[in-house]
Length: 107
Image (cartoon, rainbow, N blue to C red):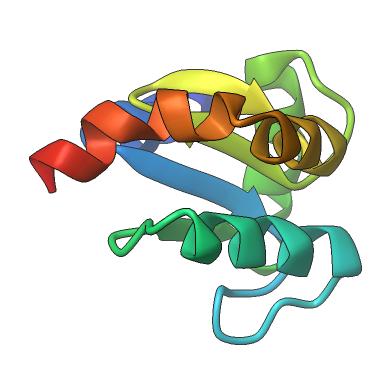
């Protein structure tokens, strides 16, 4: 399985996936930490995180997968949501809650 297939498998088989620097328990970048805090504040319990610092192939592959140059990257129900700025804006506007609602109800 190549990196693109691995990434697709991860984002489609888990409701909420965050590709980040570090882990949810130990973020290694402020933007990653911010997204984890927002998701926890939004009630996400089953967050799957992928530490891109652990694997260069994934670190580069995820940028290609979403055609998005930065990390963190949030996926909900297989769909690319965005990075830290977009997630923060969506959280502030209440939009993130709407996107997460079906996920949280099925958890």
